[in-house]
Length: 203
Image (cartoon, rainbow, N blue to C red; front, side, top):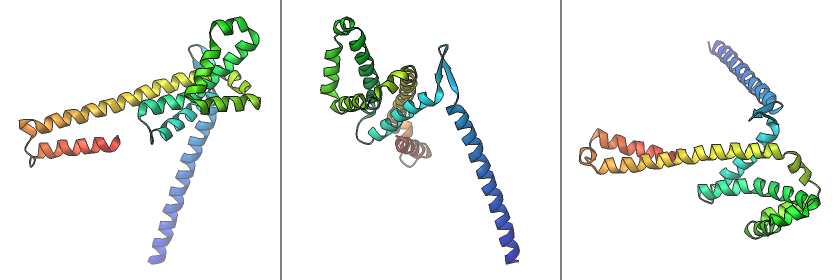
């Protein structure tokens, strides 16, 4: 009997493993296809892989920053690295090709402001310039701008979502103080309290 159970268990395990492998394979094929495909935004065709490379970099930085700063600062800092380097790369080209327009736009002042407010990003820009890697940013400028737009849209949604959760918590506090829900032993009071606690866990 025990041997029969072991055989059945092994059969089920093999079946589950095969299903997991199949799911992973399908997801991998979809991801591979998507990353090697193109995306059309506003009638312009972009490399999906490149867009998501920069987008995922910003998202990763955002979630890492959230551990040490508020969400608005975290989202700005995550975007700043890509945004500032692209700006400085484009301004550098402008300086080399049209000094008059460069001076009229006061881009030297803007670069100095970047150097003062975000020295780590400015230093990274200098490093990329010295290693002749700024061309990659210039070549991918359209994809970077698309990634920045995608990032802004999703961060706006995420921040709006958290604002809604804050409103729900405030509403729950108001309800818990009102006469009909103020009885701490009532089901309604306990239910609202639990809902408030569950929402706080999400935040």
